[in-house]
Image (cartoon, rainbow, N blue to C red; front, top):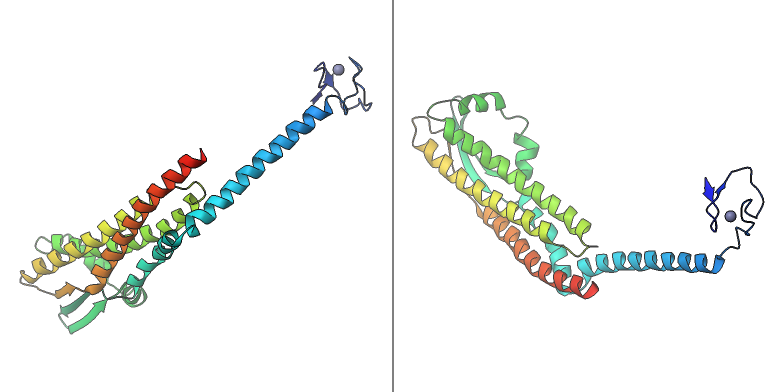
Length: 239
Ligand SMILES: [Zn+2]
């Protein structure tokens, strides 16, 4: 339903004339200069908005060398997928000794699905092995969680670039760091506890990949803290 721009009378759809049936004003021409200005202003505003969106996006990701480094470093922690996070020797009845390096890629491709999860979960209920086996499983889950946070970090780097914000990135990179560090502590403590039992079925230690991961996630925390500061300044200048 349309209204007359001058007298605000209701214009029905069968009213095809250019003049208002109530006040006789020519509707298409009424105050057209003012409405033209309003249109132009609207277009100008949305153009400025669009320019700011794309400008900030580019500036946040590639604005200077430091920001390019931050963007590149977002992907860097993915290298931990192929680095050995730990080595371990399994000593299972009927299977003998079996040594391997734990990398997330190898574990995901070769071990994760063939693992006897049923008996592992059964072990979690055991009195002597329950707590160290739970810690072992949680430590593995935490390494995956760190990668999930890392992927989310990349998504948020893109999502938050137009608004020049990096707070979520600081939190996500911190979570990755803490997950990885906790995984290392739990693994070490779990293996030493299992070693002290009468059934020491696993032995092992953390490897350099774990420390590389902690270092790279921490690097991302630091980069995002610094970037967030310069983002704040930039936002102030735009306000
Ligand atoms: Zn009218």
